[in-house]
Length: 341
Image (cartoon, rainbow, N blue to C red; front, side, top):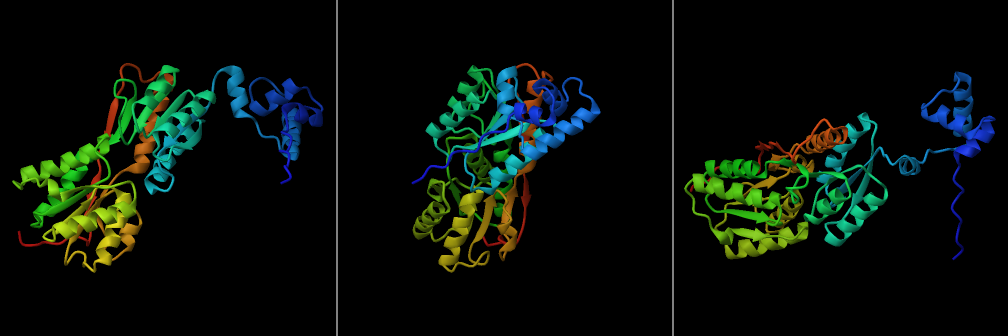
């Protein structure tokens, strides 16, 4: 295979020669830092456009030991949740003149640490992470990087955190099913090691306790991080417990697997079985019946995380790590109905 050489990068020196000025003058004209005559700015800008010059933000930050880059580490590019989260972060960072560097760890702890080292090499002053463990926060903060954990919290003593109140959301969703007479509510959860999973299980149990319904461990199924895993777990659970009248899928990604398994079994929603989900996605309003869901303020979650990070970077926010909570809402739709207890 013939290797193709990468095109030579256009430098500030190239722009300066094309515009007939010195490199320092060209730099002042393009960055606005320092004086340059208006006619010179026009000439330098035209030369830069003609040559296709792109400023090297990383090189500038290394030279000045400062950076306008912020690292954002997410866990799954396939999940709409993380796309919305990144959109909220980018909107706030962009208004403040920062650029987002997005990295994906695919839910792998080793890859997470490798991505964190990449951000350190880029000299980012701050990072927003959806952590898999406390290690990433410890690694970044040890090097002076300001870190905000978002969606879940692992490094409580080191990092600020912006979180959705998962316990509240799960409690409200379960209370909705209980109010309709459901008592045998299957609960599918992907993990219990993070604050998200633990909070959702706690909310489910709190609602049962308040409704004087006994908690049945056999109605709780641990599911892998895939829709196929959710379908398989639900299939096994329903085989053992055909008396289940409602299913609570405690994650938006697994909800699609639950929906598909109910269709495969030809169970009519909600006539045969009711369904609620934690996390609201567009498809949930496109199917019939539409799926009742806990709606997380995901874009606002990302925006708030960016605001907290910028406040730390500017010195406006000082003191020990803060925890900020956002409250989800419950959207009641057609996938649930009243049953006899």
